[in-house]
Length: 302
Ligand SMILES: Cc1cc2nc3c(=O)[nH]c(=O)nc-3n(C[C@H](O)[C@H](O)[C@H](O)COP(=O)(O)OP(=O)(O)OC[C@H]3O[C@@H](n4cnc5c(N)ncnc54)[C@H](O)[C@@H]3O)c2cc1C
Picture 1 (cartoon, rainbow, N blue to C red):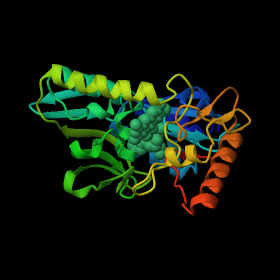
Picture 2: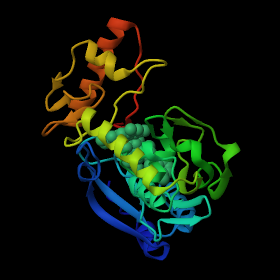
Picture 3: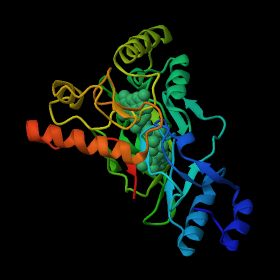
């Protein structure tokens, strides 16, 4: 979508928002799939309420982008603009065992920074790409760790109230790849509380997790991580593998040979290819096991 409303265009510089015209979502997502739209880069968090009121009043639809590592986006001219938080420095500020982190911070770098300051616990999250905000939205987790376990408070834009608020730990619930945030809430910053641990020990844990990832995931191919959530007590990857679907493809969208719950863009896969692959694998799993796999990847396909 090309922003053309003169009121919005005139207000953006005052709000500290940069408009990147004709931004390619294929270049901003780890799957390498997605069309073109205007991207609004937000430099000041306090400008968000006014920006969203402006967009809503003008009837401009929007979506919020983190690091683009858990998204399947439709092709062509997109019918909404994309909002993204610009990096803020310092991305992490430490105070005893607390880490105050901006949502636009890279999750892996946050884990490393905290580790170097003898704050551990998040070793399992080291290889999860994307931003801290994206990790909060989905309660990202790996190898027995989930970000929600360390959250003590979240500063966010609450769409329902159209204002910025801070929620405390007890006001948020974190479950397996699910949180109680409203779909249009926008996380701005988080306070994490992390256990003290010697750097050497944390590094050991990080190395083990990195090695597990390297040996089981197609890290040199374009993917969005796991496509489906694991069913209760089971593994979506194992089920798909048991059906012999590794290597199964629709166009250039392909079930990874390394990890059957990773679907990769092996060349020029379109969003339609990837969607068809998701539907076909889900149908095969349902036919064989009666299980309905739920998407972990977020679809921006409407
Ligand atoms: C190779 C690979 C390995 C992966 N391994 C794991 C893993 O082990 N565990 C795991 O949990 N995930 C994994 N993922 C998936 C992905 O990295 C995580 O879900 C990640 O937390 C998404 O963050 P993001 O910033 O990229 O979010 P995006 O993909 O940009 O967005 C995902 C959703 O979060 C929303 N969102 C993003 N930022 C914010 C914000 N600040 N406020 C509100 N909403 C926001 C978006 O609107 C969208 O709905 C993997 C992905 C890849 C490519």
